[in-house]
Image (cartoon, rainbow, N blue to C red; front, side):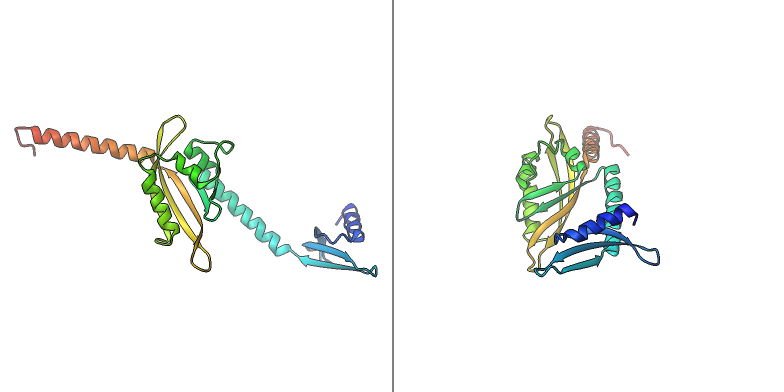
Length: 212
């Protein structure tokens, strides 16, 4: 490293605070190596240093961060909400799209499963809750549901939810991770088509002249 960086590393080693600290070192071959060091001073004044090569871990973390960033971009562009429910704590974690899909803000929404249920249409709540409970009780490995939610402005949106159940070693559900999609336009289109079909059927049945 540069002289200033070298001085910082040396000062840390002399302190012997027994705290882990990250340093980037350069090998004789010129390769840069990420590392973590801990320097301990014994009662007799002897200092012991422990170093760990963290280069591969840093690369893995960087790759994970890159994948996460691409996933966030993809889900945001596709307007897909990602959610997670911790079964034991009843807490939920949402990405930004989830708040948009439900018409609420991170500042006002309490991140609990019970708070989510409040957003559901009262006619859909029993079935949606039943499907979720069946999933976490081990009666099914995946969670699929469609339901309506009511925004603060009283408008109604249709949501399609899909989730994967994570189990512990004993087979007990501990977490559910899934996605949400707004399917309002599709549902409204289906309803409009159904009305048109019923209207045409009524006209045909009422017509005195058979239509081919």
